Amino acid sequence: MAVVDEGVVPMGGGPVPEARWRTLLRFEVLVVLALSFGQSAVYSFVSIIAKLTAKQALNKQAAGLNASESPRPWLDFTYQVLDLGFSVVIVALVAYLLMRENASLRTLGFDFAGRWRDWARGAVVAAGIGGAGLALYVVAHAMNLNATVIPTTLPDVWWRVPILVLDAFRNGVTEEVVVLGYLLRRFEQLGFSRTRSEIMSSLVRGSYHLYQGFGGFVGNFVMGLIFCRAYRRWGRVMPLVVAHGLIDSVTFVGWIYVAPHISWLPK
Image (cartoon, rainbow, N blue to C red):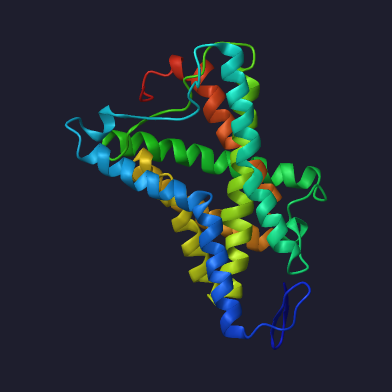
């Protein structure tokens, strides 16, 4: 659909009245979220309720990521690859929806045009947010506001690290394309102010991390606000995809090789 003064011109059709276009746009956003991070947010809400009503203290409970899917390594590997592949389909859906308004993922800055600059910016953002996020997690855990996050329980096999790195950058691609680029674009097309759009996008980001605890929610909400401002400044999601991928890569792989040697890190 292409936006014009009198409304929207769908492919192969005439103009759509403004009121109907906004209704369709709201429905589109709800469907995209229901198929992706909105669904995760609902499950995350149920998960934190379950943790809070359990007999154990919150920081004595675990929030696991990247779990094994089968005791048979090659079958486990197959499941992991399939999960990675199917989970990025939501990006294809966003690409299709953008194409209907004569835009594309490139409109969001999801391409390789930035080259080394995107990687440099992403590395700087990752360094700043990664360190602050770790500090917040340790403090929140000590205050019984966060579960113990277990980044991976994958077995010690040859494909463990490659899968974890691919998973980290899968998170970066899907979250930054959908929650950052796509949602900000749609919120503003619906007439929201920049501030309101950024807060709503960041609330979505924080909500699907609530299963980790309140520290996970707050940390990712703040991360979302920072990412929104960086996206406004650079006009590209790619540096934030890189930052997200680097943060998660260090978290996942560091849990295997570094965490066992850090006594103060919750385990």
